[in-house]
Length: 399
Image 1 (cartoon, rainbow, N blue to C red):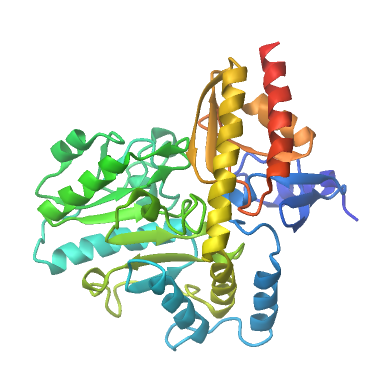
Image 2: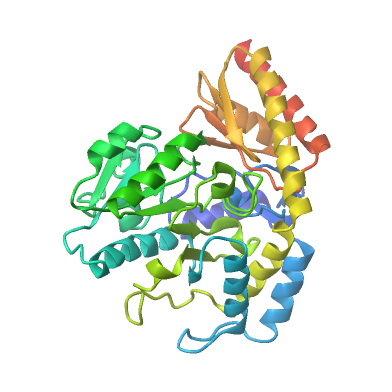
């Protein structure tokens, strides 16, 4: 059996260095836990960055994958694909949307939404409209279009000139958005909760006013729910918790239960702008990914499952707030459902590393914000273990 060091050496030699990887090689997962090459067990509160909402190797997802892999793995979208049709049916039944475009990732879903917004605007007779308003600290992906939509300068370094047609406005500032709208604007793209930006929640009133602003100006409202979708906020989609329905929604991460798949969904009046030849994805909606996604969706969409996840998230948030009152190094706790963050007054790296050494995996964004994205099946007992470990790590920082 290979050791962590052996796998790390292979990675360093042969894989592009696009990630600042931790010195850990994960080789097995089950439920809320993963194991490294040395056999050490970890409570996983990163979950592949909000991908493994059902935990690792959920039995229903594994069963669906095995069955589909023995039947049909891939065919072209030149033909009708039954698992794709069934998944689209289920997604539209569970949401505001009427039609689905399938792709492979969140950045692709956002690229599709950008193209749809421009095409729809042109179809409506607004030939000069092409600009999309996004928000400071947003994150919409790494491809050039979605990178240009991302309003964080650190991600732009080395890649200019960016794609034109994006305007940035302060998050949760409706007056600034009103001033940014022009006769060139075709859509507004927003995350209900900014994940990579530090788990920043949109104000409900802000989203409602964005919706009205879009109606008044014939703009599309696009929600990027790549990270917030499929139970992460305590509802199947975050827009349900905020009480605002967008015109377009982008999805990925947890949709496939661990398998790569993305989706862009919209209402019929909007999606009719996508006709043959306007957009495509070779692997989008392939039978294997769709079978996994349908299995995952059948679990996460259950009302009892979502209720439990929401209650667990409330419990987790309560414990984090208690830690904040106890430790002066904590600046703020924020989040919704099981998408939570603890912002520190100092770098979060020592806490992340200490937790990893003690068998718990967490994430750090914006250098000082600890982000918690545990599986939605995490128990209160496991949360208590994490809280104790965090408390001891924070005490070390303060000593």
